Length: 120
Image (cartoon, rainbow, N blue to C red):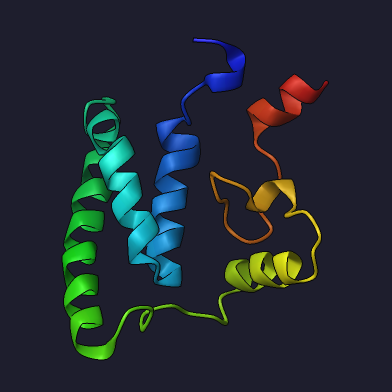
């Protein structure tokens, strides 16, 4: 696999991203992450990854039930700082800063160690 197509790291990228998406209240992206990365997370050997995946699957079931009653998007926290930063930036027509691109990092987290090392 080429450097341009490396898979996101489970501990550094996938776990924080799936947790952040649940925190913001975004079931569709959580469902996509489970679908596309769930098996790799579970087989990664990272104990926390299996727990986080189980938590995400349980959260997704609850989120879908909630949306069934209250409507799609009813869990979305539009005041979450990361959500605000991304939406305001996109609406202004500016490129989304690197720390808010996929994989999403918590508000103010900055660049990863591997990204910093490769930029040198």
